[in-house]
Image 1 (cartoon, rainbow, N blue to C red):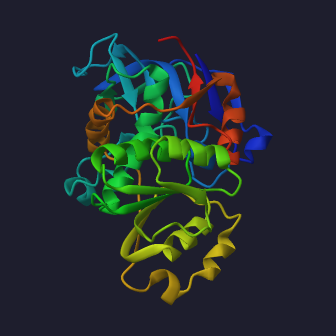
Image 2 (tube, helix red, strand yellow):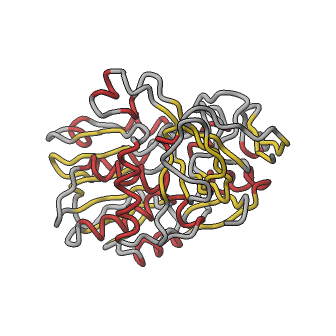
Length: 343
């Protein structure tokens, strides 16, 4: 099968992903093989390629996977050949450690990430445990469904962690793949809430998209919003939005950081943190860490009910490096998706 394989890490401009012919995987006990039609492109894939997130090398990245079940391993009974399914970031967890027993399988001591610790979706086929495979609602095309499996699911988890209440103000820092889905969830679940969106300076197209999706205000990170935020989510790969979000957070407000890694380019921004300005009066900072299977099982039906309509920009498989470069530069409109097969 054809696959884009990461054999070395380095700047994405150096094209570390290589198109290779590799053997198609065979499903083992309790596993299914999926013929992949599309795979979303995530900033976590960029973190792997550039070495900020340690991945098993060589590895096939990608964890926003949509396709059809093609083969079943011994004991796999949850799906049938031909079923349209999705695969997300959680590839496996041991189910027995203290975190799994407490409902936090995303923190499992033996957690394995799809496309990081096990081969992922930048390929024609994937083999995955049946517990980590989800039916895709009929309301979505394959391309629309792909970003729901990470950008959507992790945004849903981050929103839950904010403890947002209806009628309150939520700030979204960064308006890419995850945020443009999250705002649609907010408008559905909290119809009286106001959403303020902060983007990189000069990203007027992203600000306009935010307004079209229901933002009450959109501006640049560093600007003062019309009112303090009761909660905020930082979707960005950099540090300065943390400082700015805490500055405009109301007392007892909570910032949730929705990132698996941060880049070092503006780490000095943290030196601006002032206790009285940014942290005092019971403000909180909380991070997300991966997702659970429960998150995916809850979110996909909710996305169909709303219904969420992700904006996607498609690329052929062999242009994975170029797609990741656009993600790095914040130049995608909505979510980037690799087209691998026909649905």
